[in-house]
Image (cartoon, rainbow, N blue to C red; front, side):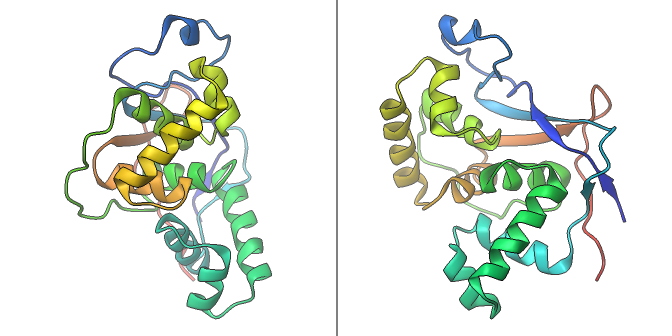
Length: 201
């Protein structure tokens, strides 16, 4: 079984710069357009490959499925779905579903689906998408970009409408598939990891 490690956000890659005020935030992830770079701590052994069932659950989450949707699709209780999600977060070192989807794409656990190119998404909307991929809340994105929470929520509503998605995890998955974002996982300066597999069951 492959051992993986917890992740903290660093650079969100190349592209247009954020505002000067946001750039001065101490320890702020640099939420630029383009490449989202997630850093892995190699000293933590809690990360592991996903089981076949966990992979199925994560794929449905990435597709926009709710806990009840996944419960019906896989024939399991909603509480069991929630337990699988907790284990997925722990295995990937994720903060929430959007972060888990970004990490899974960066590690090769999820593959981008063939999709048409995305409609126009503004620079600021891409920065907000990058914040989701880092696992940040709307309030945290607002802080790092020096925006109000309501402005961030407005950007999210526009992104959801343009991409025809229903959740942060679905937005991140679609943004990667439609080439608005690319994600790599960095092991503290080592070569980015793109191909961590999932466990055989």
